[in-house]
Length: 380
Image (cartoon, helix red, strand yellow):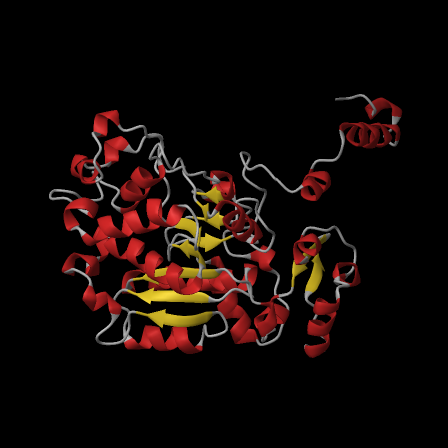
């Protein structure tokens, strides 16, 4: 419902206010803080409203899941800040890959409105039951196991790498997962084979040269529904591979010649009896593919930023420092100016505002010329 308000034109704040009963009740609890405000002719979320306590009954069934090492903690906090903005009603489960006590404490307190659990922190934990190579971050065996573990517990999950960031509402993910059983994306390369070790194909019973493949499936953005036809063919098969070091990370592999979790996922997804669908159109791997105004929703609502985006955490910090003061998210550092030339605005109403019809442009030009002195009317 709120997406319609976040993309609607406006003149004053009153034009942006929802009329549904659930939003009206939420508004009454927050006093004079409006859920949406009018900024530069477009309705946008009002950060102070959404930072408050949320209605527990409104939490969606899809749980967001991620994992982080200490070196990715900064990216994790920015991801959580973007989740707080774009998916405030969703709960998050974080898997700890060596996070220290202070980091875990912050997740359980500062980010507690969304973070419902921090796993693999107790001693002994489930992580201790896995082979030693699973605890090595750069071998990425932990990812498929965390996905399998969380999926069985929560039934429907949306996995996001800690370096990623949300840039729009994630409603399509849940709808697609419920309808198809999973949500996957491609796009990092054009052929998965050059960056995939031969021994991994052998483990799955394939000849690398004969395997019917294409671009790699992305390991950092995926959602699953339990039960579905993809549990045994992708989730469990991928987890079984991750338990064997010679499958997930054969001898001699590194990030220069092997994609680890992306390779194993792609082999499972490209299987002739699986042929998993993908929705790469919703995922951006470059800043040019998302709107520079972070408050406005991008069609590609996941950006695999690899910790290169800190906008949401920066604004969240400013908000906490300034109290309940409205923030103009369009004035972020290094984010001002026109949109990139190769960026396509996918929302129809935004296209209407930014690109008026040709007839309207011609009429405006004619009126401008008529108002000019006769000698200058057709100077150009």
